[in-house]
Image (cartoon, rainbow, N blue to C red; front, side, top):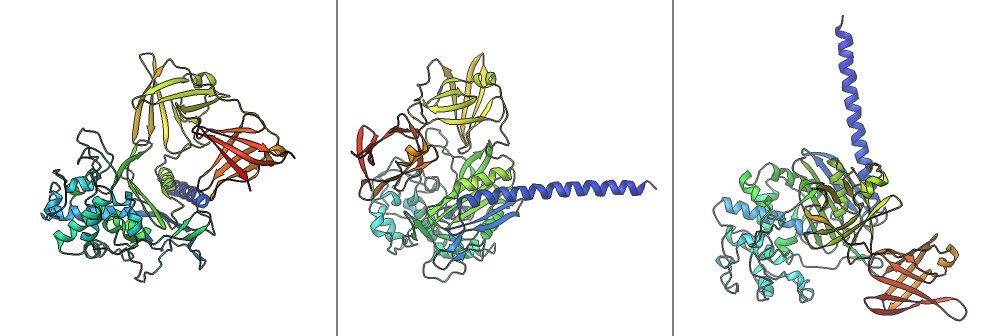
Length: 550
């Protein structure tokens, strides 16, 4: 008769686990909703988002509009131009041809384009894949704007940039380069006997049932295509670009669902052997041995010391970001249909939540005494020659880099670890032989700092100005035609926003003079004989620039 109580206890345990897991999933969903709702507003351009764990979808939603003119809501089924995420498809195509023995990663590009001017240098396929070729990227050329609407064949467009001076010798530096991936597209065509578009369709999209992925086209009817936009003062349709020009560097179109199929195939070694795909995720080095944090078509990074494989994309009207966390088998993909709204920060924040490594918030900050905080106050010199001042004011630690007027609050997540709210940046403090040491971590980039005997600069005093006084400064001040500084008061705070730039807070030194912390600049307001504010002077970089109130 003991069986029944035993079974009841098993059922109760199972129910507890079920409710705990359900609660976690709902909590994650609400947190992701909040992140995306904050950036992508209901009646503006939107985003499609997908999160998967172990190949299973755990979040799939869309926010905002797929088409502003027709007032069509975004859905997860919408098709986007993915920009430079295309480079993943190009890199894997090259690795497929490598396994087939049709090329070598050490092949000189003159094997495929005999008249390419390499100036006596050996430029290899490896150099093209890793952005270390030194070839001039065509998107950095001023002349590109004059031709970006023209359809060009691959060889004709290679002629457009091939005679540009090299930026550096192959392997000497890393510099993100669309020209290299454009050339790779032509190599794929020459070696396979298929057009780049046909290679993708037959060898990749069809093989894993990516039914809503395409080599981009402005003329083909594509079901569920999300319209692309740009924004200056207001939304407008994106600038036209011929998709023959991004080509193998940026012309793929896809959906978040198809991108999960792609990532699952990559993880499952569908296209090439594990040892071959591993080449795409190797952190390659320059000639001098420095790591470049890039493989083949993917960049290598970290979230809170956990390795990530990721890449973003940008093309007129669209921005994208994909993050894969191998050790947790978590994949996050976000597509935005405006060049004004990058999904990068949101994708990283969502990935961090999905692997239980969230950004610092009030929930994961620990309480430390003033004695514990004061332990790490001082000036630190880092291996990248930067000086950073750690100061304590009113129970709060701050970090300030020498040469910058901006202080950042840093929050304790342990007695020795302090994080910024902005990005995934942290300090790990320690003592080595009684001397204070700190490791500054900006994702994969890490620099060691050593305490030195140098005083932090004196911080300017900030005074409080009455709300009714600040209200008089509200308005638009024209610095030059088309360039306006908009001043806005909110209670007893004042903010300034220049045309096309973010809004920044102004800090009062006197009733009429204010300074910025983000840059070395100050603003002084002027009144006419009637006591009405009619202009301001912006002091920056040794220049005094007057702006008239409109």
